[in-house]
Amino acid sequence: MSGTLNYATKGGFRISFEDRVRTSTSSKGNQIKWRRSDGFWAKADDMGYEGLAEQVAFGLLAHSNFDVYAEYAVCKIYEEDKTYTGCVSADFISAGEELITLARLFQADVLRYDRDMEKMSASQRLQYLIEHTERITGMNGFGKWLGMLLEFDAFILNEDRHLNNIAIVKKPDGTYKPMPVFDNGAAFLSDTTRDYPLGSGLGLSRLISRVRSKPIVTDFDKQLAAVDEVVGLSLKFDCLPDAIQVQSQEYSEQIVARVQSILNHQARKYPHLFAGI
Image 1 (tube, one colour):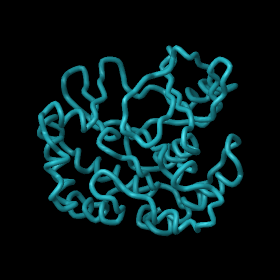
Image 2 (spheres, rainbow, N blue to C red):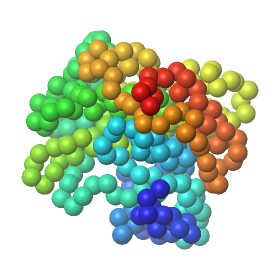
Image 3 (cartoon, rainbow, N blue to C red):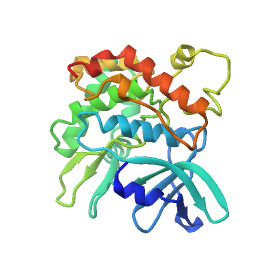
């Protein structure tokens, strides 16, 4: 955790009700979000252990070949007389920059991406997203970045990467760049309220088989095959799988052990991500 987040989480994160952010989203769950005047954001767990998922995903990103990503730290959130468990992050958008989701970008361009992609193959859908994003924004290399993002989602089992969770950043000079990787709270089977309850009696492999990917197809392996065909697989981690250790004082031993088991399972499934270490 950076010194900045240490500062934000020391003694818990204190916030007022007036700092709540009202958002309209198609994301899974309905997390309460706040933005404090010093630029820190907080999100309360809604369906399980989203905060831990964000923190573990950040730890992985710090050992990856992604250039930029949001930093998250688990903490208690104190909103006046209420206490929540969740996570905190620093604002990753600089002054004058604007975050634009692909859904919003395509709507402004009058693209009917949902209708257009309906009869396409997985590879054609991915190519569609890449070509139109690069056409509208003038960016080069967006395809490789998007491919790495979808690889990362497969590894962490992020089931919520819809087109409102993929974005680009418009800079003050009018040019664009990919977003820092953010919003990974739906990873690691974090939804214990509805889809992946703790103590359900189902084995880990069975629970993992229930996870559905987005935004190309609902099967992670088919989505990765499309990435490999269109842009090639390029995500890498610079650590050995054994170095990834899940720790948290804010969540039960059962939850921490489950996330660790998921990481171990995924590392065995995708050993190429750690090749060359």
